Image 1: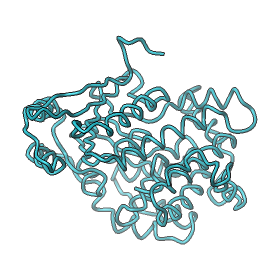
Image 2 (image 1 turned 90 degrees about the vertical axis):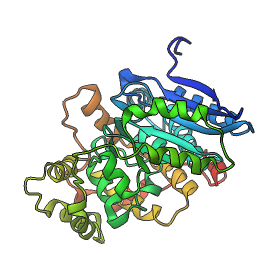
Image 3 (image 1 turned 30 degrees about the horizontal axis):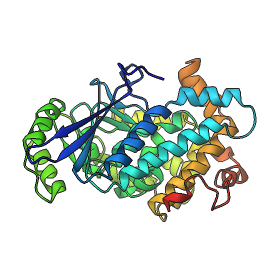
Length: 373
């Protein structure tokens, strides 16, 4: 447990000029790029649940300490330890962590009052799960958004089954397969963010919100204040826009093999962004690519709660198969960056292996996230 002097989640309440209040949750784990661990997820969920029952609460702000990262992902080092300690079956910690994390993400998506998420710096994996749930998703000039799970043998989770298939031109399939990074303006252009503000504007915004006399339509008032602070100057190019038609064409394939070959066949020229995306796909987990392709197409048809239920099934299956453990080992434990994937190529993964990932360890009524639907 953290001492009270260094909480990983700083909980604040701010009184406004009209006597109402708004809450603020600040991720405070900068040494690990604000990676979300189990305790942090529990604290956030419990606090949000308390605030939603109080009539004087107007909205919630979620931000972070340190300019480098909003949240770089989940606490995968703890996952590795849990998988190493238990040689068979789903480790209890894995089930608990993902259940709590996904419930938090779902709570944010369905929260009864506005949630402003300040996505400064790195917003990846588990951080994207929090960010995507906001009603007012703010990026800045330092934002770097990505779903990099293919590099560790997991799959784009935290609601990726829901929000990635709903992006235009099959870009969501491309992002999940390549871990391609987006800046704040690119994320906004694709519908993954709502506003782009200067990173140092949050302090005056908080002060402005404290001084405000809030109307009944709080969401509109927040949107106006965020819109007023937009227009941060940029020299950044939209690296995605020139490739949209080629990405859409490549990702329209009927199989993951066809899609992957289509992406890798794109002539990237001297575009570093596309070259890196292709290289990540080529070096990533063939199992993840197969799982995500099916997950993406199933998720297109599912409501939000069912996407999270499916993802918990996938996460538990992933925890006992060995691919995730190997990916974390190579990236963060031994750091040799040479994972030995279970399969040598995307077309070598048997259909029965993929099908197994989409079975549930639980009956429908016993599912840990059954209460979401």
